[in-house]
Image 1: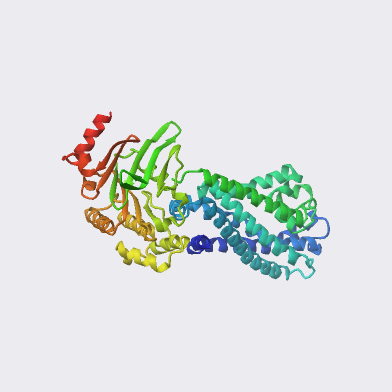
Image 2: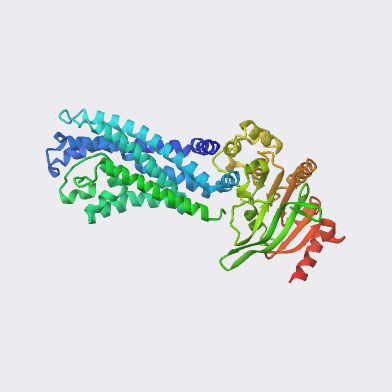
Length: 262
Length: 240
């Protein structure tokens, strides 16, 4: 409990935590506000008839989860700052059992990730609602209001845990953050383009899977990540994401236990 | 551990720490007596910090062990309440105030927040407690490190180069506070490469050179009537 309190203080005392929340809100709102306009403009590329298709409307509400990119940065900062500032020394002097520190950090990171996603997704959903008011025929499926919050919570926790593990591995916040953004924002998109069926196994594919969207886009639109017809359903997506979190947490703890603190 | 009636509260037992081809500490065996100030001396790169990091479980020995009250630091039940440590590089978040940094550390050991204010007062940092650590001078950071070491009111203090960056007034202040802590019964292990300064502060010395222990005893035994600096040069020449 003491350790959790200490890790919680590390989180809430730092300004970057609030900055991350602000950026996540900005990304979510930007995505949900811009998505109806782009989907409407590109409606000929989709099966169905643009925003008359409830799956596409659901995907706009799903864009409210765009803050997950920031959840991984939050996890990286939580762990990476320990090493970058030399704070790891006082942390491990106070609690030399490093596994305990890592568990506390993972719990706080998961909680912070969920909180970040809860706030940003909530505001993003409001953004989606407001932007879709201009398209009177755009009606979401009622399941979207269950799937989106679940996707937000699971992705927030999992991505923040993955961030802690990446921070433990790389130790340099800037390199780890840039690498993660390149992975999630560029490499995953390339994998989807070159090997479409592989996309559903990737974190962003699994987050889309949790939204239970079945959208078919014409092939040249795959770069936009809009073709989700073959993605896993919410159950398998959640299971796989939690498995990723467990694997990353294990790697993070394994590395932390074996390294000297300099 | 008791050897010949002398109580060793900390001990190095054949401690060796190697990094790839470099042996930083080579088969170090020595004990530190309770209730005394022991200087852990030697030039930069002698292996002092590495040995202390092994003692504090921040680094894993290649072989041998470094023990506090017969156990490794990582096995202590409430380490902050038993051992206070100052490590050369600090260990604070520079974007947070001194007080917030101490509150984070205090929370991890279940120490009340009020104690953070008390120790900041002990090291004369009350006025700067809400200032960000990145705005502290090197001397203020050293004081903050000492404050964090005293958070848990430990019996043992391990200080790695605490005089680094201190001006003459700061050094005099440090000497005074160390003497005060020693009279209160604390055991202090203090590493330094400033031999002249340590001569006025410590009771016992361990001298390390190129990772090896070259002298161990009371300051009178080791210096043999000369200054500690002269004794050190003599010992190094003999060891070469």
